[in-house]
Structures are given as C-alpha cells and as structure tokens.
Length: 76
Image (tube, rainbow, N blue to C red; front, side, top):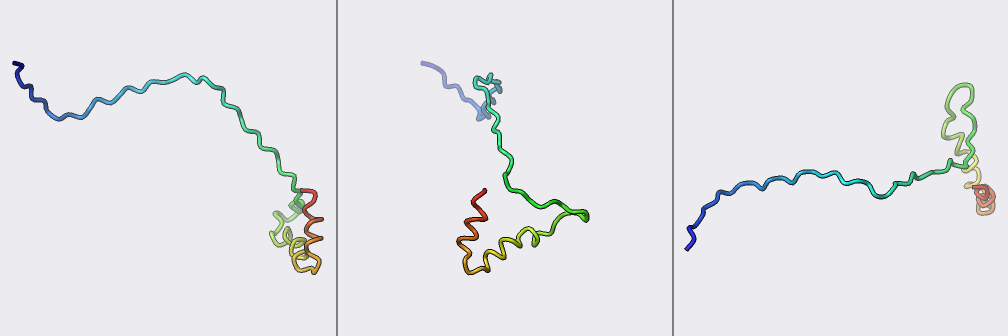
C-alpha cells in the first residue's frame, strides 16, 4: 500500500515564452493616393470648409440636382 502524499496548493509554473520563426512574408498594403483635387491653400493659410463645400451646396439647392450631382461625381 502506498502512503498518502499530501501536497499544498501552489500556483502552476508559467510556461517559458518561445519565439517562433516567421514562416510567411508579410506583404505591405499599398494604399493609392486620393484622386480628389482640392483648391490650393491660398496665401493666407488653409481654405475654410465652407469654400470647399460651396459647389455641393449649390448643387443640392438646384432643382435638377440629380443630373448635376452625377456630373460632379463622374470623375471620382
């Protein structure tokens, strides 16, 4: 008959960290530059957002806005 061995509750030993070699080559994702042409900054600094949105505001208030918006966005 085996004698009963009493153990104390201890935290398990942490596993050692093993560095695994990289087997796959990570490809760099190339994001193309946007095609949108913005007006120049001007001599006084940045252009206000209202100036950038002015053509769209005129299109949205026009009765034939669908055709004008399609023409505006066809180059994008």
